[in-house]
Image (cartoon, rainbow, N blue to C red; front, side, top):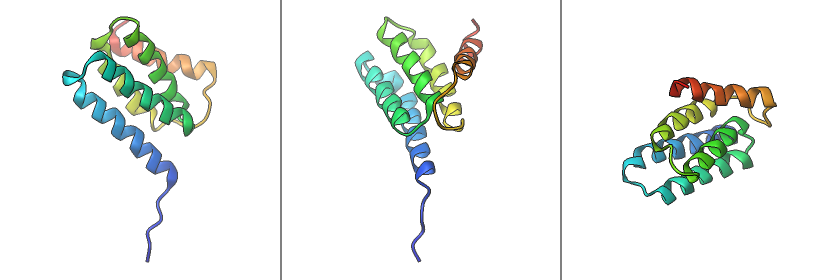
Length: 109
């Protein structure tokens, strides 16, 4: 008997795996590799309706490409890991602000 898998859970696992792999590789990655890894996560999240992950990845991608915040990357990746479990679909602006505020709180801003 074949076991059927849930496509949602498969994508959720892929996104979580990419976030975890990037977090593990951070100490050994060049800035360009980090930006590419974040972009890969953002695109996968966008293509499959993980709006919270997409929003956080987009903001992180901009921050890193804009000149730093290397120390904040793990904080964003932690928030993105949490966001994988958030309801799928486009995020209302209030929800986007809430996810970004959670990162600010984790960073102590």
